[in-house]
Image 1 (spheres, rainbow, N blue to C red):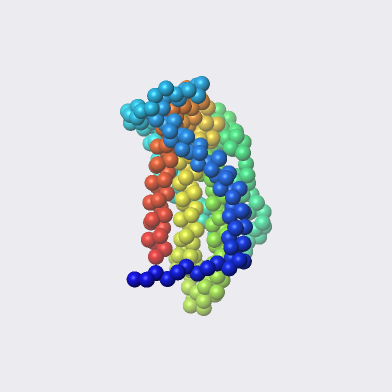
Image 2 (cartoon, rainbow, N blue to C red):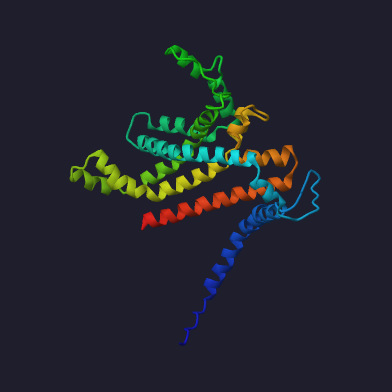
Length: 300
């Protein structure tokens, strides 16, 4: 079988291709220097005993063998998975409902959009400070409300059975705003003719939602769920700021990224910390690939 020769590029096409490479070169260079090289360096260090003075002496699988027997790692993994299972569905659902709400022709629509977007531009330290005040067992607003309805106050930040739920609420509250804006953009991209045709057919709001809105929003919902998964798997700052180092409920609240921080910057066991980071990357990659595969199947 004779293969047909590739068509020759014109001078204009060659020039366009050249300038295309020139334009993406800074991005490729930045990704190489600040992402790919540190990533492969971290993978290498995960097999070493890299310590406080950036010196390593051995290369082995010892870090991963220790990791498989480390109860602290598995408790942090369970805490992280708890946050994923609880937070991601709630974040996606609440973001969708809020996006639908502010997409309606309501009074003070711009004000509501601004207020709902504030958590996305608020520093995690400020978020943690506000919620620590709300959760305060002595004078916090939540316990005052419980006392007002005749219930006993709750130790939101020190009760081992409650701290993960308390953390999850803060994580959800601080994560909704950005996803809501993405979903709002998706809602506004749905052609209005579809809703006009549905109105002619006397379709009610619920039928319009399940027949038009939800199917048209599937790609956006999958994108939001993917970034929500990745974000929750990397939760650190809110947990750290809410409970601090050496908390008595550390076992119930510590995430994998918190564990990485602890070994890398507190214990100075950077080789072991690198192994934790590699395992977190593999978990994130596996979940993301599963989501992408499921999303392609549903879209088809």
